[in-house]
Length: 70
Image 1 (spheres, rainbow, N blue to C red):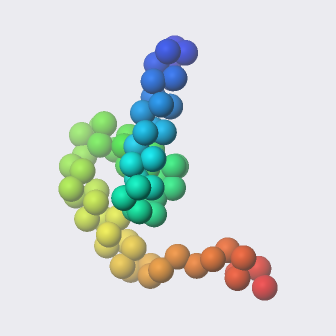
Image 2 (image 1 turned 30 degrees about the vertical axis):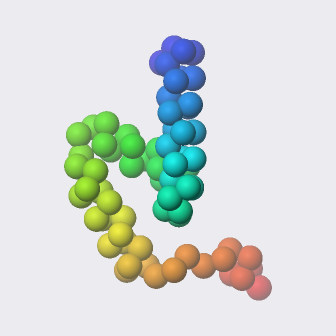
């Protein structure tokens, strides 16, 4: 990947991450980049969203890492 393509990809991910935060999705940048890559490979975005929702329901609310240390 050349420098211009890398810059464009980074800016696109930054924008998607900002939108994700505005919508309060709870997705971190790494997870969002994986989901975008899967969509780029042709996976159905609605199916991916359903999987994320199902995983969140199965795992329950996220725990605070600070509480795990004590």
